[in-house]
Length: 117
Image (tube, rainbow, N blue to C red; front, side, top):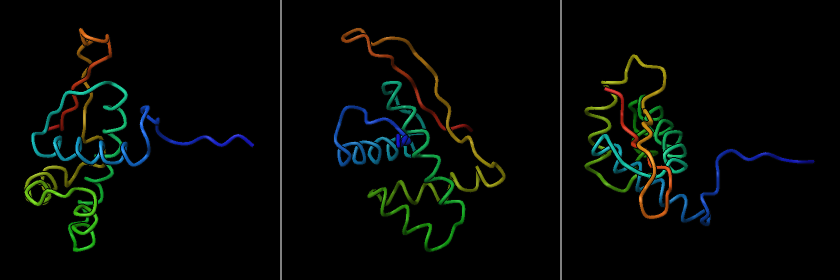
């Protein structure tokens, strides 16, 4: 039986991928905009939108869940003080991917991921 798995491997181990997504999501939530390659951007949007959806419950379990994924206290504080009230009435689609073009060195597709205002 063929089993399909969600998400791409991005050419790294699973622990490296998880650490990379945690760091990228912390940067995205902190600066509200990050530039990366297109495959990483696609993975980042699903990861980050799950974090924001968890945070919208705004209780102790949501804070613990975010602290387990993001180790920066200032970012978690910003999520609960600024981003959760902003997306209170929105049901999803908190991020946007804008394709920039190709990177000059290795011709990788580059994209900007930003939070919707």
